Image 1 (tube, rainbow, N blue to C red):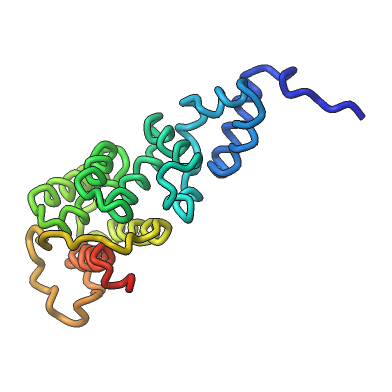
Image 2 (cartoon, rainbow, N blue to C red):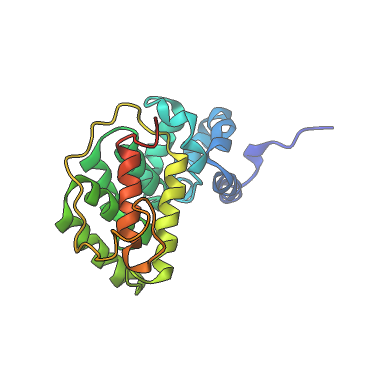
Length: 220
């Protein structure tokens, strides 16, 4: 039975097929990269990279700074893939110890990607940059319409903790300079200091947990 030749298909169809594969996982794009110049160019087009699912890249491959998969990931970042920008910002801060660069990357999409605003604010608290943290919290409230004490805002905190689970921790993080939360809630010293169910101090306790992770207190 003769094989159907991919070059016989119009570019629009091939591009859509590759885009759907990339939405499934960035890892599945390898065969198209190796298949030839035509599919290689389609894989590295913004139409494909902007919609790729990059989450599978944030496992063992992230520890290979010059690996082929990481190169694709960085191309996704340059194409404007918000999920790629989000996870790359987390990895710069959490894995590569590039604190300022990670926050700057998150700030790029904070106005359209509320999870990035919460991540940026939380990381800024860990660094003692309470003014920057306050600005990001305010931006999050403007974008979502949720106050920090709103239970719906907590879903973004849980999203951050889940995302950090996918990013391998650095085993040699220097401790951030200081922990400063803007507007310390008056209920933080009630009950368990490591977690609290009160909506008023949820973001404060979230920042404490993340800061502990960054300082390797939960990675050792």
